[in-house]
Image (cartoon, rainbow, N blue to C red; front, side, top):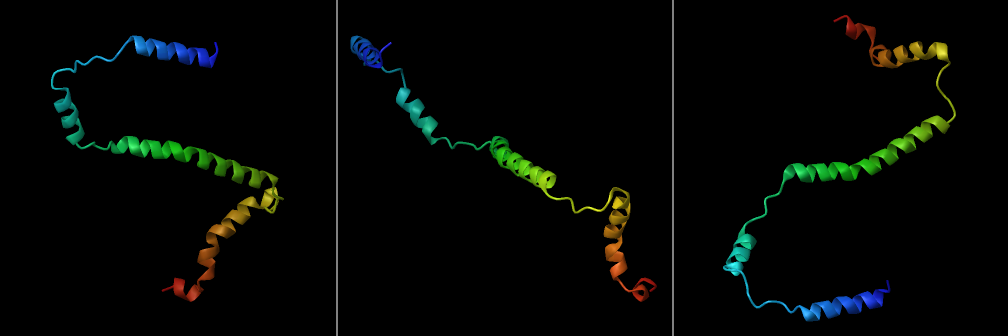
Length: 104
């Protein structure tokens, strides 16, 4: 259907059905009371919306770091030395202190 033809039909239908002069009883009062009421913020929905908006950047960062890890040249120790490298890393802070301070 042509958009112009549809527009003309809709305008003709609107002209054939004029708006009513009747207004529901106390319509103005109901609207004014509704406008006076403060809108209560639903904190859980605000929090949920913020978390959903954060999913795309988090997934993008995760994929970026995954690609970086997979595509970067390996600088890790050989497979047999992983346990020793982990132990050295964990114990590095203890080995940095002098032995005399540990004996007190």
